[in-house]
Image (cartoon, rainbow, N blue to C red; front, side):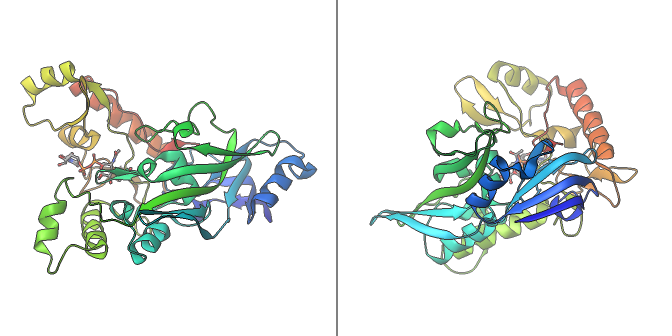
Length: 338
Ligand code: EPU
């Protein structure tokens, strides 16, 4: 187990914010984690924050507590039939390595979630999603350790209470459990999700037949065009969630904005792309000091170099206020403020 005091988090958040943690702890096994939680090591009783790849976080100041990071690795096939395979993966593995592993084994389900930054533990907290698939569609169960007494618990998919970018780990049980591994179910039978956006058009433009690899390549191309690479420019992907509103409110707005896109959620609710509204407010490509809005996707806020978390947060507040003024819709960050 690694324990480091006064630790820079610069390489643990894709926004590239140089915040510091009073203490940083990295564990390689669930036992090490339990030992840390129940032994006297955390004597100072500092607050705890569990992070994954830091691709969905915004440090608004230094963290005066202990940042915990999982380095639990490994893949294990725990159940297999002629139809599917269940694989238990350590929470510290990179999510996209899981996708690559499934694709190389010709297992279906994860390919639309290619190239999403972050780690396995966070994938299950955040219910990451893209191109018509959410990770909840693959999760069988999630194992976690209780922060207060170090006991282990396995949550079924249902017990995780998944919804759009939501889970029990972000709500009722926030801060109470630390995920040690996640079991995903991949299908051995072809099961394509090709209806989102321009996937079909992109596929048609590519030579050759439809394979897991070619779909992964299409997703790479679509993402590269719209989403900045955090290695080159600090960002956390979509900064805001797409708001869900009443269909009646949407119908009213369509009077003024007939081209306003929406995705159906249920009979009387729709999801509106926040990026479209932010774009319509004129924010795309704008820069204020050291922060800005990405040129190709208005939903992504960027650190143009050396920004503080506070500067990003202030820009986000200005954007949310202007969206509310124009459309009467509140937008909320998908990124977690720390
Ligand atoms: N749009 C604009 N201008 C923009 C951005 C978007 O007009 O600057 C319009 C697009 O033309 C399209 C609509 O808004 O009609 C939706 O845009 P897009 O398909 O790019 O998807 P999104 O709603 O912006 C969501 C997820 C992404 C995910 C994509 C693809 C959220 C908050 N974001 O973005 O997730 O990759 O769909 O499925 O749900 C992430 O969570 O970090 C993330 C990148």
